[in-house]
Amino acid sequence: MRTMQLLKQCLIITIAITVCATSFLPVAEARIEAVKGKKYKLTKRHGPWMIMVAGLSDIPESRRSKGLSAQEAADEMVYELRKRGIPAYTFSQESVIQRFNTLDRLGREERRSYAAQRAMISVIAGNYPDSEDEVAQKTLQFIKHFKPEVITENGVYKQTPGQPGPLSGAFLTINPLLSPQEVAKRKQDPLIAKLNSGVEYSLLNNKGKFSLVVASFYGNSVTETATSRFANASESETVSNSLDKAAQNAWLLTKALREAKKHGFPAGNATDIDAYVLHEKYRSIVTVGSFDSPQDPRIEAYAKLFGSKMRPHPETGVEAMTSEYFIIPGASAGDPPLASWVFDPKPNLMQVPRAK
Image (tube, rainbow, N blue to C red; front, side):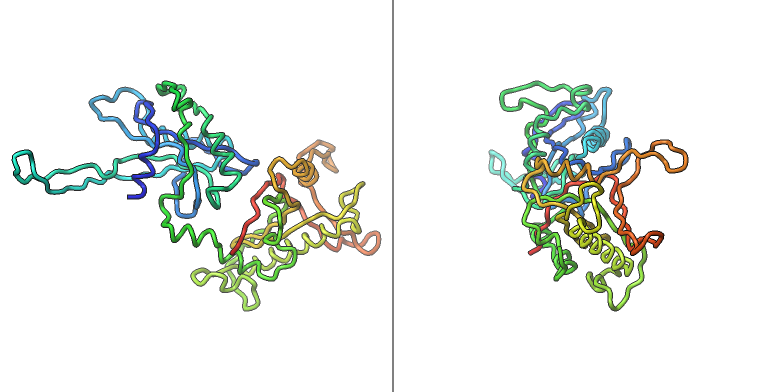
């Protein structure tokens, strides 16, 4: 059983329960929800590659005293990780007892049983395309040195040469809910390839490893049209024709950014911007830049340019956080703008997808 074999590699920690720990790391700032007490359960949508952070199992009632249950500790650890920008989840596995016939020392037949899989609550985090992913590797190193309060304040941990930190045994693995075939299919991502086939300025043609998301356009209806790029994109689901409007807006903004200098953007230092568009199942996004590393200094400059800023309200004069925008003015003074777009309040760094 693949799940059992993966969990056996975890290390054991006492935290009013038996805790085996492995952990993760926050990457470029992401909008990760973190609500204390909320359950974040692992599904097939996550991954395919993830980090095994911890495996927790309740101790026998005869040895149990006050403290957290395995589920409570797992939920708390997930919350701590999410507060740090790491998408974390819990995964439960039941005990599996297998029985077999054997002979005792006197040659008599007897029936024995053993625990082929022990009940455990695992904490798993991250969503990475493969095990060599740069973000995954950096997150893994962060987690190996991370000391969650649920362990340091509620548990007992003894440092050893082989286990310098409570989560230093963290390791990369595939989502235990996915089969190898599903992982291979996810990696190829045929839907993304289909939605972006022949698209000018496609992010799939970006030669870098990372790009900065500066604008997102979402569909909101369930009406399908015969001319839709998204019609029949998935055989099993109806796709919104409003996605076509989102896709068109995203592509027009991408084109405008690539010609930004003639439109006077950005103000005071107009210049053409290396922009890309990507159509996904429920949205289209616009990204800027082509970077080989999350530490590229251009990322910070772009994030500052496109991110929201404190500006005085035109009527009250009170300063408020306002999203950045891009307007193409009308042909003459007084004419309505030819086009306008509002950027995401907080740009996010993403990996450039590779559709095969």
